[in-house]
Image (tube, rainbow, N blue to C red; front, side, top):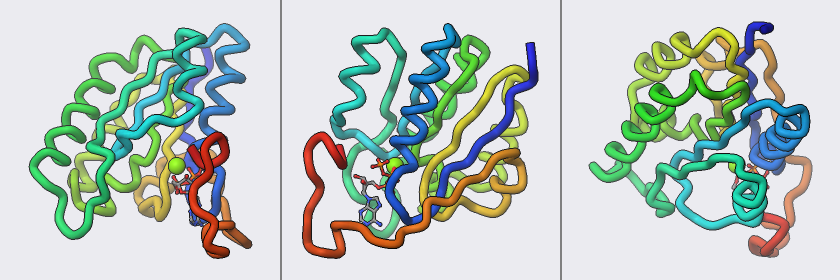
Length: 168
Ligand code: ATP
Ligand code: MG
Protein backbone atom coordinates (compact mmCIF):
# COMPACT_ATOMS: atom_id res chain seq x y z
CA UNK A 1 0.00 0.00 0.00
CA UNK A 2 1.14 3.55 -0.82
CA UNK A 3 2.00 6.00 1.95
CA UNK A 4 -0.83 8.40 2.80
CA UNK A 5 -0.30 12.15 2.70
CA UNK A 6 -1.53 15.09 4.73
CA UNK A 7 -3.86 17.44 2.86
CA UNK A 8 -4.98 20.88 4.01
CA UNK A 9 -8.05 22.84 2.83
CA UNK A 10 -7.95 26.31 4.31
CA UNK A 11 -8.80 29.93 3.44
CA UNK A 12 -11.75 32.23 4.03
CA UNK A 13 -13.82 31.15 1.02
CA UNK A 14 -16.56 28.56 0.97
CA UNK A 15 -15.82 24.98 0.04
CA UNK A 16 -13.41 23.45 2.57
CA UNK A 17 -15.78 21.05 4.27
CA UNK A 18 -17.71 20.26 1.08
CA UNK A 19 -14.45 19.44 -0.76
CA UNK A 20 -13.44 17.12 2.07
CA UNK A 21 -16.83 15.37 1.97
CA UNK A 22 -16.48 15.05 -1.80
CA UNK A 23 -13.16 13.29 -1.31
CA UNK A 24 -14.76 10.92 1.19
CA UNK A 25 -17.31 10.02 -1.52
CA UNK A 26 -14.57 9.40 -4.08
CA UNK A 27 -12.59 7.21 -1.69
CA UNK A 28 -15.68 5.28 -0.63
CA UNK A 29 -16.51 4.70 -4.31
CA UNK A 30 -13.14 3.02 -4.69
CA UNK A 31 -13.71 0.75 -1.75
CA UNK A 32 -11.46 2.68 0.61
CA UNK A 33 -12.41 3.02 4.25
CA UNK A 34 -13.19 6.69 4.88
CA UNK A 35 -14.42 8.62 7.91
CA UNK A 36 -15.18 12.12 9.16
CA UNK A 37 -14.35 13.71 12.49
CA UNK A 38 -15.64 17.22 13.14
CA UNK A 39 -14.23 19.48 15.81
CA UNK A 40 -16.20 22.38 17.30
CA UNK A 41 -19.26 21.56 15.23
CA UNK A 42 -22.23 19.99 16.89
CA UNK A 43 -24.87 20.87 14.36
CA UNK A 44 -26.70 18.75 11.84
CA UNK A 45 -25.85 19.17 8.17
CA UNK A 46 -27.27 17.55 5.05
CA UNK A 47 -24.19 15.51 4.20
CA UNK A 48 -24.28 13.69 7.55
CA UNK A 49 -27.50 11.96 6.53
CA UNK A 50 -25.82 10.64 3.39
CA UNK A 51 -22.75 9.45 5.28
CA UNK A 52 -25.10 7.55 7.58
CA UNK A 53 -26.96 6.02 4.62
CA UNK A 54 -23.67 4.89 3.10
CA UNK A 55 -22.39 3.50 6.40
CA UNK A 56 -19.47 5.96 6.49
CA UNK A 57 -18.53 6.65 10.13
CA UNK A 58 -18.60 10.21 11.42
CA UNK A 59 -18.38 11.79 14.83
CA UNK A 60 -18.66 15.34 16.18
CA UNK A 61 -16.59 16.62 19.08
CA UNK A 62 -18.00 20.10 19.57
CA UNK A 63 -20.62 21.87 21.55
CA UNK A 64 -21.77 23.63 18.40
CA UNK A 65 -21.67 26.90 20.31
CA UNK A 66 -19.50 29.81 19.27
CA UNK A 67 -16.35 30.25 21.31
CA UNK A 68 -16.44 33.93 22.14
CA UNK A 69 -13.30 34.58 24.14
CA UNK A 70 -11.81 31.65 25.98
CA UNK A 71 -12.67 28.00 25.34
CA UNK A 72 -14.59 26.43 28.20
CA UNK A 73 -13.52 23.29 30.04
CA UNK A 74 -16.22 21.49 28.03
CA UNK A 75 -14.65 22.67 24.73
CA UNK A 76 -11.23 21.42 25.85
CA UNK A 77 -12.54 18.08 27.12
CA UNK A 78 -14.43 17.45 23.87
CA UNK A 79 -11.41 18.31 21.72
CA UNK A 80 -9.12 16.06 23.77
CA UNK A 81 -11.64 13.24 23.57
CA UNK A 82 -11.83 13.75 19.80
CA UNK A 83 -8.08 13.52 19.33
CA UNK A 84 -7.89 10.44 21.58
CA UNK A 85 -10.66 8.79 19.58
CA UNK A 86 -8.83 9.52 16.33
CA UNK A 87 -5.58 8.05 17.68
CA UNK A 88 -7.38 4.91 18.84
CA UNK A 89 -9.15 4.29 15.54
CA UNK A 90 -7.15 5.85 12.71
CA UNK A 91 -5.29 2.65 11.82
CA UNK A 92 -8.69 1.31 10.62
CA UNK A 93 -9.00 4.00 7.93
CA UNK A 94 -7.51 4.78 4.53
CA UNK A 95 -8.86 8.36 4.54
CA UNK A 96 -9.82 10.43 7.53
CA UNK A 97 -11.09 14.03 7.46
CA UNK A 98 -10.43 16.14 10.56
CA UNK A 99 -12.85 18.96 9.85
CA UNK A 100 -12.26 22.41 11.41
CA UNK A 101 -9.13 21.19 13.21
CA UNK A 102 -7.37 24.56 12.69
CA UNK A 103 -9.61 26.08 15.36
CA UNK A 104 -8.18 23.80 18.04
CA UNK A 105 -4.94 25.75 17.68
CA UNK A 106 -6.40 29.12 16.75
CA UNK A 107 -8.68 29.24 19.79
CA UNK A 108 -5.91 27.74 21.97
CA UNK A 109 -8.04 24.73 22.82
CA UNK A 110 -5.10 22.34 22.33
CA UNK A 111 -1.43 23.45 22.31
CA UNK A 112 0.06 23.68 18.81
CA UNK A 113 2.98 21.38 19.70
CA UNK A 114 0.53 18.67 20.83
CA UNK A 115 -1.31 18.81 17.51
CA UNK A 116 1.97 18.61 15.60
CA UNK A 117 3.12 15.62 17.66
CA UNK A 118 -0.28 14.01 17.05
CA UNK A 119 -0.09 14.56 13.27
CA UNK A 120 3.47 13.22 13.08
CA UNK A 121 2.23 9.99 14.65
CA UNK A 122 -0.32 9.24 11.95
CA UNK A 123 -0.32 5.70 10.52
CA UNK A 124 1.89 5.57 7.42
CA UNK A 125 -0.83 4.41 5.03
CA UNK A 126 -3.46 6.95 6.21
CA UNK A 127 -4.45 9.93 4.03
CA UNK A 128 -5.37 12.72 6.44
CA UNK A 129 -7.41 15.75 5.34
CA UNK A 130 -7.32 18.78 7.64
CA UNK A 131 -9.75 21.66 7.15
CA UNK A 132 -10.42 25.05 8.69
CA UNK A 133 -9.68 28.71 8.24
CA UNK A 134 -6.28 30.17 9.08
CA UNK A 135 -4.43 26.86 9.18
CA UNK A 136 -1.24 27.41 11.20
CA UNK A 137 2.05 27.43 9.23
CA UNK A 138 3.37 24.53 11.29
CA UNK A 139 0.59 22.30 9.91
CA UNK A 140 0.97 23.61 6.36
CA UNK A 141 4.63 22.62 6.67
CA UNK A 142 3.67 18.99 7.36
CA UNK A 143 1.23 18.75 4.45
CA UNK A 144 1.97 17.60 0.89
CA UNK A 145 -1.18 19.17 -0.55
CA UNK A 146 -2.46 22.58 0.52
CA UNK A 147 -5.40 24.35 -1.10
CA UNK A 148 -6.60 27.76 0.00
CA UNK A 149 -10.20 28.62 -0.82
CA UNK A 150 -10.03 32.34 -1.44
CA UNK A 151 -13.22 34.31 -0.95
CA UNK A 152 -13.96 36.55 -3.92
CA UNK A 153 -17.64 36.82 -2.97
CA UNK A 154 -19.91 35.22 -0.41
CA UNK A 155 -23.69 35.72 -0.12
CA UNK A 156 -23.24 36.27 3.61
CA UNK A 157 -21.75 39.67 2.76
CA UNK A 158 -24.99 40.49 0.90
CA UNK A 159 -26.96 39.76 4.04
CA UNK A 160 -28.08 36.33 2.84
CA UNK A 161 -27.92 33.98 5.80
CA UNK A 162 -27.03 30.27 5.80
CA UNK A 163 -29.33 28.24 3.54
CA UNK A 164 -30.46 24.69 4.29
CA UNK A 165 -29.01 22.27 1.76
CA UNK A 166 -26.40 24.79 0.58
CA UNK A 167 -24.55 25.97 3.68
CA UNK A 168 -25.65 23.16 5.99
P1 ATP B 1 -18.68 24.53 3.31
O1 ATP B 1 -19.06 23.79 4.58
O2 ATP B 1 -19.89 25.14 2.68
O3 ATP B 1 -17.81 23.76 2.40
P2 ATP B 1 -16.42 25.85 4.49
O4 ATP B 1 -16.13 24.57 5.19
O5 ATP B 1 -15.40 26.34 3.53
O6 ATP B 1 -17.81 25.80 3.78
P3 ATP B 1 -16.33 27.22 7.05
O7 ATP B 1 -15.22 28.21 7.15
O8 ATP B 1 -16.18 25.90 7.73
O9 ATP B 1 -16.70 27.02 5.51
O10 ATP B 1 -17.64 27.98 7.50
C1 ATP B 1 -18.76 27.41 8.08
C2 ATP B 1 -20.02 27.96 7.45
O11 ATP B 1 -19.85 29.29 7.01
C3 ATP B 1 -20.46 27.19 6.23
O12 ATP B 1 -21.85 27.11 6.28
C4 ATP B 1 -20.01 28.00 5.08
O13 ATP B 1 -20.79 27.82 3.92
C5 ATP B 1 -20.09 29.40 5.60
N1 ATP B 1 -19.04 30.25 4.99
C6 ATP B 1 -17.97 29.84 4.27
N2 ATP B 1 -17.21 30.86 3.86
C7 ATP B 1 -17.81 31.97 4.33
C8 ATP B 1 -17.54 33.37 4.25
N3 ATP B 1 -16.48 33.85 3.60
N4 ATP B 1 -18.39 34.23 4.87
C9 ATP B 1 -19.45 33.77 5.55
N5 ATP B 1 -19.79 32.48 5.66
C10 ATP B 1 -18.99 31.57 5.07
MG1 MG C 1 -15.92 23.99 7.11
